[in-house]
Every structure is written in C-alpha cells, then in structure tokens.
Length: 156
Image 1 (cartoon, helix red, strand yellow):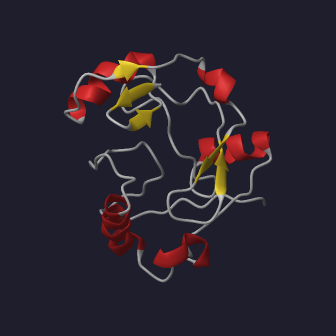
Image 2: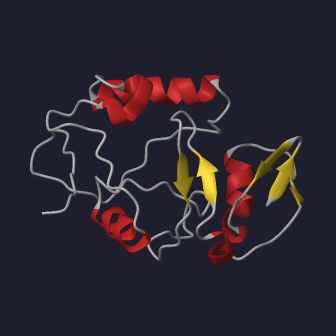
Image 3: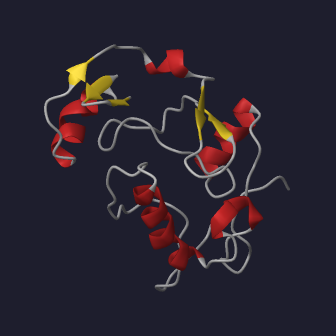
C-alpha cells in the first residue's frame, strides 16, 4: 500500500513505478506490504452501487499493466464466471440481450452499453473514484465484423 498525500492505494509492487508514472503522481510513501493472497476474501465497497465486492485471487491477473487488481464481471467473461463459481459469488448480468443496462446497473439502467461507458466514467470522476481512463483492447468474445459483441455467461 502507498500513500500519496491523503490518499492510500493498493498497488502490486511490480506495477508501482508505472502506476505512479502513468498518473503523474508525486513520489509515494510505501506504508505497508502484503501478499495479494492475504487480501483474498476481504470486502471493498462498490463505487456507485449499494453493495460490497469480494476480493478474489486469480492467476489471470497479470503484472504487465494496471495495478495488479481488476474487477470481475462473472456474467460477461469465462474467467470471471469460473472465479465466481469457485468463490460462490452471484452471477450478475447487468446487460440485457439487446445491449442495454438492466436494473442491476443502478443509476445507469436503461442505457445502451456504449452510451453508458462515458456516463459511468463521468460519474466516477465526479465522485472522486476515477484516477484515469484509457481504452484497453481485451481478448474477449468476438465475431467477424465491427459490431459490438457482449459475452453472457450463465448456468445452463
């Protein structure tokens, strides 16, 4: 964990330098070190929904970018789905078959996913939970063509 001013961040040691550089932060104070496995099962507060999220440990979280921490979307990715099963987490699917956010998306319900993204980013920035935003190319479900594909996982 590091402190920058009055803020505390949990960042993988291997990614600390790139985290600080990418966000153009002043030199952080290292206030503690813990193995990621020790955080397993801890809870953190969702940034805009009235619920907690459970911290899980998975081998697909890599040390090549980011912070070493990622969110899970069990209803929209095979790895996250399998992690949810292993940790007995609910399989939330906050996007319907037409690509619109459902009631599970809270204040963004009813928005088309591509319209929701900038609104969610704006909201996170407004409430102080966004450090930065960038487009990242993920290796996820895809089909030929240039349309948006939404992966939905669920018990069959």
